[in-house]
Image (cartoon, rainbow, N blue to C red):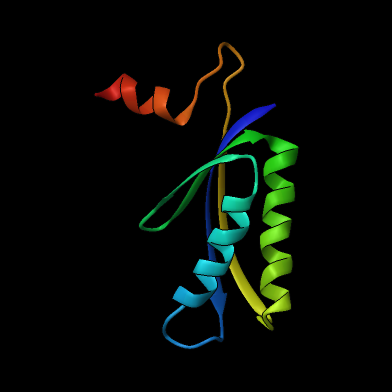
Length: 95
């Protein structure tokens, strides 16, 4: 099942700035074959549900390697069964 995910990962207990950790997560996401677009509060990712979930697990593994002991995630998934729709298609529909 193809989904568009909205993912926000917040490393906790690492101080007031999480930018170094977000850069590491971004590198993991950028290295994947999935299409992703970062925004101010997270990242949109499109792909098969299993592939998106595996990518999230890779992000978690990278944070564990960096010593992050607590992480807060918000994930929202949307899908359509009546037609294929990309992130760009959704934005074009409201422009």
